[in-house]
Amino acid sequence: MYKVLVVGPTAFFSDRGCHIRIYEEVRWLEKLGARVRVLSYYAGEDPAGIDLVRSGRWVRFKKLEAGPSVKKPLADLSLLSGLISQIKEYRPEILHCHLHEGAFIGILGAIGASMPVVLDYQGSLSAELSEHNKLFRLFPIKQGMRRIEHWINSRVSRILLNSEALKGELSIKAREKSMVVGDGVDIERFSPRARDSGLRSRFGLNQGMPVIIYLGLLNQYQGVDLLLDSFRRLKEKGIKFKALVMGYPLGDYPMRANQMGLEEVVKFIGRVNYFEAEKWLSLGDIAVAPKVARSESNGKVLNYLAMGLPMVCFDREVNRELAGDCAEYVGYVDKDRDGNVERLARGIERLIEDEKRRRELSEQGRERAERYFSWEKVAGRIMNAYQELLGR
Image (cartoon, rainbow, N blue to C red; front, side, top):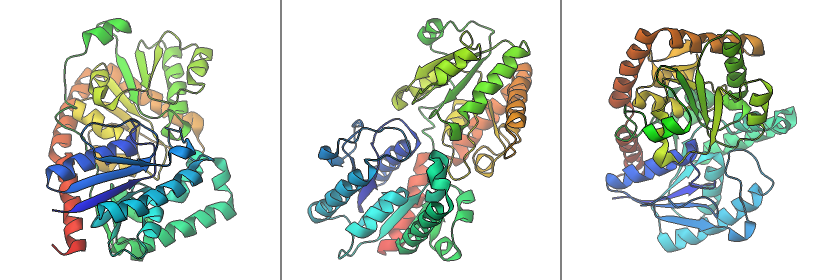
């Protein structure tokens, strides 16, 4: 039906949110009849069933986690070169570009070619850079990035949003060509299931001991620093629990946890294969999603809901849009670190002590995931956007 080239300025595939979105969108777009090829950096794994082309082997870009890198400009230059080649060879009808970086490359690559450029918008470029690196919080740099961001928004043909909350980041003109396609989860694979006995034994997870799980990137803007401090508060209060912290990069988090006296209760698993994530999530009684960034969606929330995991998260607009009433919300106040830690700890404590509340959230969360957040629905909305742009 439609011939699509997806531009992903990232080390696809590396078991994290943006990559999961690319993978699942491509998989479901093809099920709905589109022909899709992905162009990305020369790094990452090759997921089965994806027509994937890489560019820039000479750059030796190895960074898997999100955030700036000194090699990024070279990697993007190589991606632009690869895009120009793919436009000639593959002859796509539409460029579906992830992130502002991808859209910028798409706009340049499409000069002279008659095809729409779609931006798969997952958050503000300037805000995301500010959260990853303090350098980008300096006023002249932040203003410069905002201007680039607005220019990109003005030049693309359509902006696809994964959250209604993101509309507030767009100018009035950009909103006019935006469309909320939503976020999704594989509701067949991520579903309530019995705990994996082998993993239970491996980590000494005894029956009756509540297990708290986190799965995602490990960094400050994901709220991991606050999470560790909340675990320390719970331990100091004498509350019995085990915690599995899954994801990467580990950095100095294991050392910091040990310094807090958490070595017996908090286990760091490292990077978890997305295609095995459901086995790890099944180990939990309670899930936590303490992300503090305002400029991005929070895909782990949907994985938790689909698994029927009762969840604690900060009361943010994006979280409310995803989880509705199916979460234990705690308040987040800017520049009140101690208060945020205490509120997060209390939220976890409430769910540990209230088994009935956990069962209610589990059932309601699974139902909500099934009703609103299948990837098939997301892909269907994207296909509608293609149809509007191509007129067929």
